[in-house]
Every structure is written in C-alpha cells, then in structure tokens.
Amino acid sequence: MKINGLLLFVILSLAMIEASGQLTIATEAPASLSVATLKPLTVSEQTVDLKNILAKQPDFAADDLIFYTVDGHTGVNVKTHFERLGNLEYEDNGIYRFLYEPNKWYRIDSKAKTFEEIPVEKTFLILLAGHIDPPELARQKSVTFAALGTQLVDGHKCIKIEVKASDGRFFYDDGVTHIFLYAAVDLKYLIIASEGFAPPSRSLDRLQNISLVPKKELFRIPADYKRLPEPVKQK
Image 1 (spheres, rainbow, N blue to C red):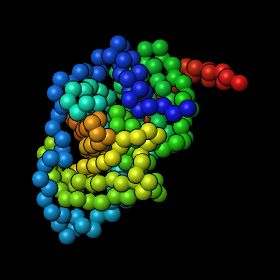
Image 2: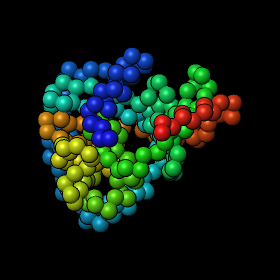
Image 3: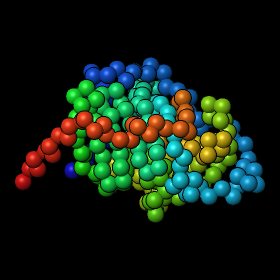
Image 4: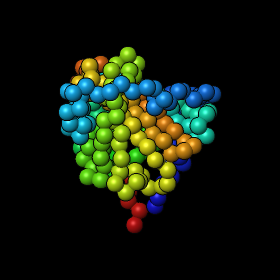
C-alpha cells in the first residue's frame, strides 16, 4: 500500500503534539537557504568526493529541527534529538527513543522500561517531512551529486550539494523536484542542513547544538529493560 508522505507526517505530528509538545505551529516560514549567494568552489573543494563524504559521515550529536510547509508559508516545526555512532543511529522524539541498527530498529520506552523491535522497511524513499540519511542516499545507484558552491549556514562554511535522481523521483508520490544538502567543511563535512522542494510544499532540516562526540551509552538498551513480544502477524 502506498502511504502519502504528508498523511504519514500528519499522523505522527498529531501524536507528538498530544504527547510531548515537540511540535509547534510555525506562523511564518523560515527563509530558504537556497536564496543565499554562493561563492565559487576552491580548487581543493572541487576535488571533494561527494558520494564518499556522504557515505562516511562523522559521528555526531545534535538537536534536529525540521520545518515543513504545505502551502509555502505556514507550517510546523518538529524537534528531535539525533546522534550517530558508526553505523548506529539514535533518536529521541520526546515520546520514544529509537535505536537504529543496519538491519534492526528498536523503539524504547524509558518510562515503562520496555523495548520492542520494529520491522525494517527496505524500500528507499525520501519524505519531505523526514530526516534525510546521507549514507543511505549515497548507496543509491540512481542518485547523483553535484557541488554548486559554498555558503555560510549557522556560521559554518558549507559545500552546497545538489541531489538528483536519474528517474526524477525520490519517493512514492509526485512531488520532490529538488533536494540540496549542506556539508560543513569544519565539521568533517557533516550534513548540517538539507532542503527539499515539492512546490508548493517545502522542508528545511537543520542541526543545532552540534557535537562530534555522541554519548556511547545511548546506543545500548539498558539491561533491566523488558523486551515486548512481537505483534501477531495477520494472515
């Protein structure tokens, strides 16, 4: 079954509003990063292997703020905490904590001291309302990358990278026409911002309070947490 990205986002957003307050209504859309004037790439910047820096993103910890609008003006802000350690990822959305391993995802409930395994979806897709995974993006054979120039993003000099799909589509439904990534030169080319366009919809994802030293203890499920049984599969 095809799931519309906006529908999925609305469902998740309503749950977040009710339970955690991590989502706020944005009455004014933040300025697009794409309106900034780019500076030409230096000789050394022109030789940067874009697919390699996306595939080998550094470890980090940061607050992740995603703005999403349907009409190009008003929209919503969703804030989560995100960390990466090697090929492991950790996310805290204010309701649950999530631990992502290459072939396993876990949802962790700190209040109940329980955890459960979530089936991994192998289908590659990009939703404007979601976090873009640079290493996963780099593994896609149908995707190409081009460095357009450099600009400052939150005080960091970044290489602006244009992402293109050979078939012109990034996810199930119509829409995504342009995706841009911003790799911070002084942070080992960490992608600190991304912007997607599906006119009139737009998303802007920015990392804040960035550290290149994640907390290792977050990537282990506490020994006293109880594993929940797997749901019964419908025949």
